[in-house]
Image 1 (spheres, rainbow, N blue to C red):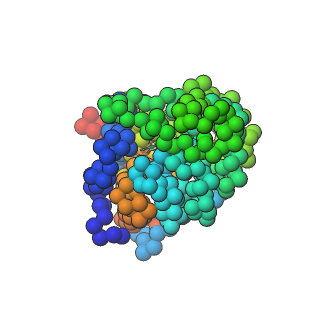
Image 2 (cartoon, rainbow, N blue to C red):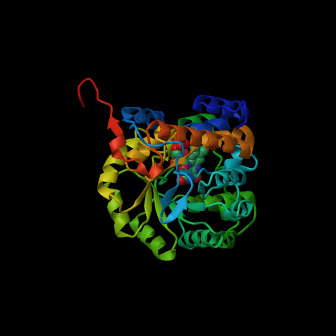
Image 3 (cartoon, protein in one colour):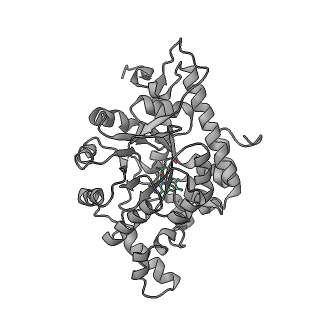
Length: 371
Ligand SMILES: Cc1cc2nc3c(=O)[nH]c(=O)nc-3n(C[C@H](O)[C@H](O)[C@H](O)COP(=O)(O)O)c2cc1C
């Protein structure tokens, strides 16, 4: 690890802030509304306490996990984060290469700075998943998925919490919208269906066309059902927080969910993902793979999520800050640091295989009222 590279999350965030334009940093760091969700995402982990056990040989620790039948080298995946060239010119190409070094799957966003094909070409051997913002156009939705399949992506992750953009006070104050500046359009402009819609070729036309198809406020289970028929790849639904929403997912043959509030960027005063997890796990049992994100910052955070029923977690802002600080090597530093923290956490808990983590290793902190 680079000697001076920040270890503490606060230092990581600070150094990223030092390197980025204020409005760009604000876009990455901020949350929706008054940022209550953003804050609770981190503090909610502190309501839980880990209970270590004695006696296991922890001289080596296995982090291997099986996810929809495939082994990944760590219970950590890189969350879909759009427009990564805002943080570093190499954007997703740098992050996917870093993820591959650690055997962590990389989720490419629909609104990536580079097209899904360019990301695949940058690191063909990486385990890559494609995150779909279901477009308001069926032919385009199908085309995105077919392109992802063709380019070797291993799963489709449909994000369901983007009916509209969160009311992000910082961005509104800064009058900053990377979308309106035309960032994150590569997957659209490289799409044959999208290209066929372009009447002229001015930048304004392209932007207007993208804004027409980007949001899909009427997205519902029928679309998910269509998607299920359109691809044989595993499908995950990202943004599930209510146990009832898992039932339809099971019925439709969906493979997994991401318990997520989008890192606090969408609905403010939203339940923290970690607080939504126990009831979701109780309902789902083993019928779906459960991933979780929003507020993962440390090894103990990961173990808490696994103990409450997640199969693996997604890392968001921390790796983007690493990218902003020093590109691919910055992402690698972040991934190395959190892997070390996770490994030590497991050793100190008396666990030598991450698959052993279960609810017996965790207690909810008791309050003076005993609640
Ligand atoms: C700058 C930024 C851009 C994001 N872009 C997307 C996106 O394109 N698609 C998506 O599903 N989620 C997106 N997310 C949400 C992440 O996938 C993830 O849910 C969130 O970052 C996890 O929370 P954390 O940042 O606290 O780890 C974005 C998050 C950030 C910080």
